[in-house]
Image (cartoon, rainbow, N blue to C red):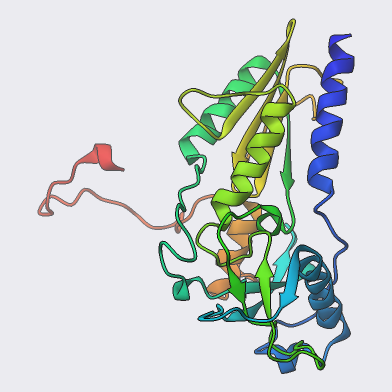
Length: 290
């Protein structure tokens, strides 16, 4: 019965997050601007995917009196996998949040974000207890947080309505770039987790756990990245060797940045033939710093 309850809860959570996921498109370049993006069908599809979600969540209306709509812009980014290959071309419609005025466009902006130390503790705890871990990246997370203020934005550049070019969008949900977007997303996800029976950490408000008998399910939130940890092996699959964290992709990116991708690998990051002698006249150093 415990396993059934956990499976039902995690399935509900995955379905909740998967509701915001979409298909991916891959292009070979990052556009300079909208006109450049419109020359490639993959970027056009990526923009239409973003627009479909945007138009579904917001209303095209006549601008009210004294309305000062916030401008929007497109942000294009190719996402790379661990092997350095482009796996997804992401087009984001972003609000120029620097135009927002406090007390008019937003009230509160604070949203809890997991500290890296907390994530390390979670990984260490999971490894010591034999928990299984998985990570989920929620696409378009910020676009699904409800906002309380009345916010109007201009139509997306390059996709203005031919019938209503002077109309603006009244936002019902958050938009990337808005100052209150992270808070709105966190509030919605937090509400779902609490309704599902999770308990929020008293010290870390980004940590949620669900206990049933001897089983425990843990959720750690880092903006739109979520880590699942469970004591039941039926909940989350993971290798028997343990939990491993590596920076292979980061290392490849650094080598590419400094044009050292074709360099010969070495087990020791210095010449092994160099003779090292004590520097009797050199300045003393604190060895503990190294």
